[in-house]
Length: 254
Image 1 (tube, rainbow, N blue to C red):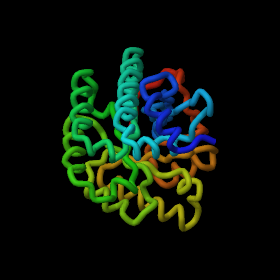
Image 2: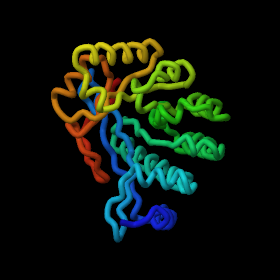
Image 3: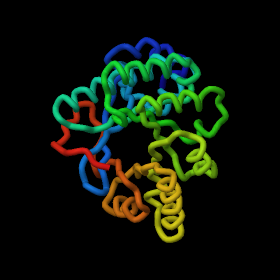
């Protein structure tokens, strides 16, 4: 197995090359059954070590600062994919995972806003997804940047919603358009757990925030997502992530 230092050097060299690429996993509306968005996921196929675990890759990128170049690369790929979808008449949104570390460089926010405007993206067509664990920490300058992006039409999503006590506080503090329920919570949603998760969903809806259920792998999981009141679903049952995914023709929905 390669050492972390070796992977760090290799990642820095790979950021602009074909080893790094995006795959996309669709989300469907639980109201219409139509595909409405797709999440962009970063992947790294090392020439000697094969597929590198995404969490390992992102952890190294955050520690070494490579997250800034990597993040912009993924953002640019998402914009290109979004343009292709729209050129073919598919009015979907694209979601991109971002690290709070990226906001430490304020030029990132300016870059996102400028590209969103330059490419004439419709409001809500780009969603930036932040992890709840990191967003709950006090980060000077983060909130004004998030508010600026929201004002420009970029939507903000919070992953890991419902896992910690701070989830509802983040609903009040952050300019969110969306929260995502972890697959583990959805898959365990029975009895009291289902009622508790439904309360979290209702709290999000009370703030005007839509809810996406992640990790949907079976029809039972999908049923749980519907029963707790989720607006959208995402997971292997719907489709595995793919870099060359061809979606069936659908129309936009909630």
